[in-house]
Image (cartoon, rainbow over all chains, first blue to last red; front, side, top):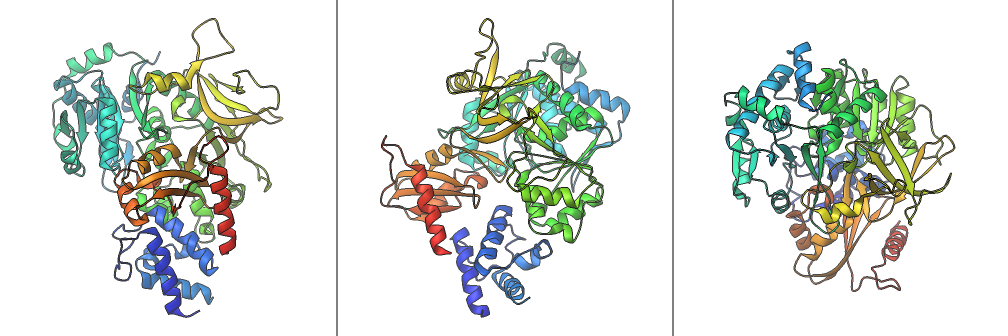
Length: 81
Length: 508
């Protein structure tokens, strides 16, 4: 799957969580507590279902969740592992 | 005979005054520091003329918060903890319900207080800890205190939209902590890591066990619960050996293969409560940590902490349910059918709880109290109050209770107890909503809201964020033309659920 379409799908999932956040430009989703632990758990479940990947504890780090681009990188990597 | 929870603190100060009682990333309080601070706060409250009244405690989760709790008790009052993240409108409902005349806040919450409709006395924690201790005043307060005096009011979700304040006393806490400590073998070597919020009674396990035994509790930073590897590193750094967490916090760790990377080295005891532990996840914990003792604990806030326990000392088959076990000593469980008769051997019935653990009901609401706290039908000759939990269970062949289902629309979501009716009441209050119905989908742990009206989802979400705590916000919202009804004209939750599940299957 192409990175751009992965990014679009993730953006859609994020927007379902918080309609009012500008996910294209936010770079500190975890650091600024824009996404909290509830969001993360939902997000991980949705991403796992959508892309059929398993997100494990080693990937539960701020670096992977702080922005749409970080999320895209992580999913792309997991899909190609 | 012990009649006051403060005796736990004072006895421990005599033994290990300088030991750390409570700590977080910013602050450490020793037992003597805790006692000293609490006495100052108690004096401050008493000097304002507040006595035998509820005191709202609205502070950041920290060792200071605990000093404030005990300070309120020193002052002869009872504490009403409020979640620092609670929306203002809900705080307002609680203040109204308690008719509180006094509130303690700290530097992180003082601004929020200024926006509230609170006309009573506001005490700033950072200031009142400089107050001198008035030993004569505090002695008089202690002399006049009884074990049936209230210690706290914990607000829980109310099905009609108004939260209910469960009022607990010294005697209930003492009965609870004595038996919990014995069953789980708590002692002064326990190093607890607190996960549960301080505004509900689950946290009393660590708090009062720490006071009683001279143990130590570390307050875990909230964000670590979404970073499982860092969370385990934290547990190891502080040599945590005992945790009493909600199931969601535990499954978050096991469901993501955390143990492949890191394991908690010092853990000896894991107690879990609040929700059903999915057997597959429990088995991961049990297999990966063979030296750890696991206990399932069950009990509603209305009966002071937990009322039953089960030592989960084996692997469970996929189709089994982990039992909630047997009542603690000095507590009785009665299973009643719909006609309030005791059920026979293996029949299911509503769990009703009897004992000193039964709290004093809902603050300021005798009507709701009388519905749930009723005369024991099996002893009709004298006043004997039992609490009807609304949980349906049956006994297995070993006499262990197995939880089956709820009687009503109360759910457990992410470790929190929620009345779906409360969410519905708040949704209905939003302009542009006609009818609504909330269901809980266990399969994906989602609160799903169905509604009719002309308000868009985005706007509705915005309005709900002003009223509902984070964990009560619906995870999915579906706008409909009509809500299906049953033959009796009631909203048809079953139909909504099956339609939702069918839609999910179709999109996969």
